[in-house]
Image 1 (spheres, one colour):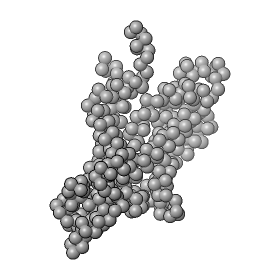
Image 2: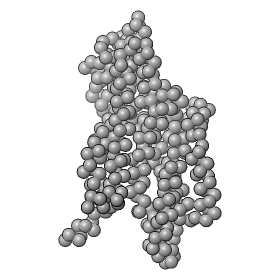
Image 3: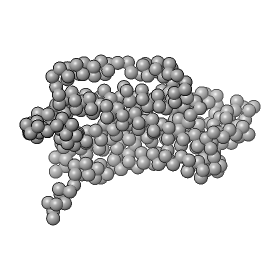
Image 4: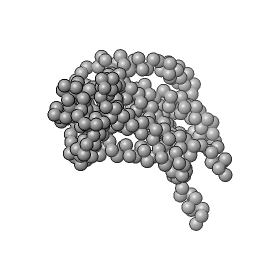
Length: 310
């Protein structure tokens, strides 16, 4: 019975259980789950509040005071939980939760696509070796030293206006975010390729796709899970940073980076700090939660950590 139970526990299940036992893992998972739920339930939450992110409420801002909201802390009230946006009177809570959804969807799409590309390139380099590894390795080195941020800014400025900015941003972030994953997976695949079970698969004539999918990939799942968890907050930060600089999401689309960028200007004009604080706290929760969860996952999949615990 004990043997059957032990066999039924996969390494992934054991690692997840170990992650949830750590304080940082639980805290990170709770913070990340809270913001993810808030983002994906944005329509429900705004309906509960009774507001809409596209509704302008000019009567809630003081036109004689530069458009600053009436009331304390940016107009926080029972009808406007986070106050209202200076100048327009749009509900800030609605803007934050819809902006949260935009930020999360862009970061998730870019992270998943970049990790898939990086894993495929890294596995191909590490397993095939030879001239393929040499040529592709030089390209990866070139991409690693490429001034990605400057190119991202330049590309965002020249993309036609009829293409949705969130799609462009996700594609661009994915196109340049795979390099680190490819290097890491390349190193680990090369080590796996020298193992006996890979030699046995080669000797038995196992097709290449089955070697990749049935032999290599299961041994890389832990690493890829950690890469996703740690890449996600970095992608969120880059996406928000580009929007903050005005070259990411357009001002007409709710986004955390856009909100924080706009709030800086209003803070200098004497507006209440709520416009800056609320979007910043939500962005902090995303980055902090994903980082804590990623660190806990990394420790959980680390064999040395398991041996030390014994």
